[in-house]
Length: 352
Image (tube, rainbow, N blue to C red; front, side):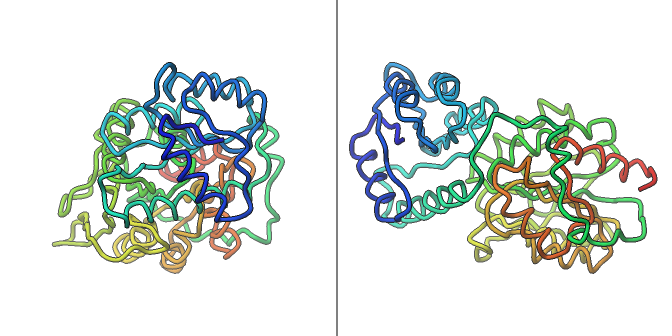
């Protein structure tokens, strides 16, 4: 279902989806009120939901859509403004699973082409996942564990000096859960996050995390020192790496080519961190589509670092963590609610 107050946008997206193949547009709606009614009648698998609409906007319509059809997967679509970034993140907390920044009509055709590619990729990734059910309980998720043959042998314990997190689709809520579980020990370690997000969204995401954690949390700046008790988020549209300057690790931002169609890319952070922190790095690869993070994970594991992957049962899309697991690079494969506990034990120096 496509929900947008612009008939031009609805028609354009419907055409793109039809040309991509493998999908059916079962209905469209021009406002939130219509969307709620059609969600109940047509039971769409995926809903593309605009934010700014008459009568009932996307933020107000979202919980009503999910109540009418709990199994649907909602992708929020909005133009790139700070307010819309804030509303989009609020939608994620209310049950939307992903977001897309909609190009303005005045922008160049290449922006529309990138939006189209990202949209189709997200739809394919979500279409390949198992049908969504109302959230499985942690107890159920813990039963669905991968075979032990997919788990790498744990390295010799080294007290962690830096926590690295990579995520994409479904990542903001997953990152929030992990860091809240880690709150008692976050003052002891710096946290570097690559979350696939457009510019402006990452700044709002960092502000949101700071309000939750009551710790310094911000977009990373080039050259700043990496310090314990600080959470740094890679800025949208820029790669974030690390370097050692006069013995102190610092942030390095760059505008190099996208890797795995991503900028920022998890691979960039993981590769650099392997060189700078070595075995004293710990990393978590959370829900997300694609395979970003796998190549960087090879460097981390070779350097003796510890890596945890989110399991399939609790991932919105088991692309990134699944790729790490299938490559034999994950030392633990855990449901989301267990990842923070495991990391906390490592940071606190508890026995593995």
